[in-house]
Image (tube, rainbow over all chains, first blue to last red):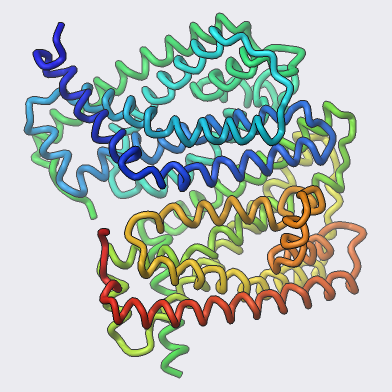
Length: 273
Length: 280
């Protein structure tokens, strides 16, 4: 099947290209984006080293890598349609024959491509400076990393429909969500499993967030020194795949519902600011 | 008097900007959730690491708890002048403020003070909540000194730190007057740097020389140390005032630098005609 003959693929490619170009067209963005994840993971790595357990330093470096993607999901996926609506772009999406799911998928892939350089820089700098002990099984790392990103960006797609409905609260909701989700997902420390500081009920609730399962699976596949695993790795991979599928379907349905409702009530292009 | 009126009006503008998008209680709760989660996350990192190494100490937990809470406090309001300019360019507020006589500095001061007051409230609530949550979850007793004197000393340290935070804010604002694309990301960069260099989570002596020497004399570091002397058992008043003295000195120097940089940048921006420039 040729790319140019399929409108879905053409749309996804176009949206991917725009997003990737916005980063790679201005390489300084990589240096700018790397700042916060790097310094945060540097601080937490120093906490592990300063207070007794340098062997866990890798948790913080991995956290810095994944927080880059989580930030991208929140700020450039979940709230993107809301911003597009404010500048009139969403109206064009809706009135064009371009499938909305293709736009979302293209946006996700572009987001991943755009975030990858800064995430890689955090990983490289962290590993060069701190050299944490890891014993990775690379095929599992690649599989789990891909599934984690798939489920995380599918969550971003689902959130984008929610933000589209709620409008101007998006920025404040993003600010309120960023830290708590990082906390319960255990971005910088294992929030689930044997060495989690949290009670079982919190661990169970945290497991509903794809990032939690993804972080745990990544820690296992990278061979971090965790004696007791939360769930076996292959089950976590299956859960991540399932989450990605469910969230993808949910986002597609939610957007279709909002689109239909917006058409009926004539509010689809109403700007709320 | 007109300057004072401008500052008070700007404080009100700042509060409306922060809370008026919803009802004040919801707005306040949502602003507290982030710092609270940040404090618990930093404390959990310490707990996981030190428990595995069998080196857990409640006083070190108190050290991290205070540092994590106050770091978010400083990061929350020191970037407000930059935000007021960057956002103000897009909403046409800042050019309007600028063309009214002698208003930009009182406006930025008022916006910063508004954010200082609200983030002081959120950080106090975060500290109290995280104290109870962490004491219960980690099953430990966190050695805080909570007396009228210690709380007053903590507030005094916070007030003193406005000098340095506003100075930093003005330095960033001087850049924001000219910037058209990276100014939004700059505060997160600065927040990250503060986390590393202000002794928020670990003693700066763990940093390599000469970085540790620079971090050691930053007013933010002295502010953290003074606050810990006030709030953690074992602190003494002599050390507290020594740190406050150094924080004040550093704060005055940073504020003077920020003021001069902003004035220079403002004059240059006026000459170049970029005060309302939004795109490169």
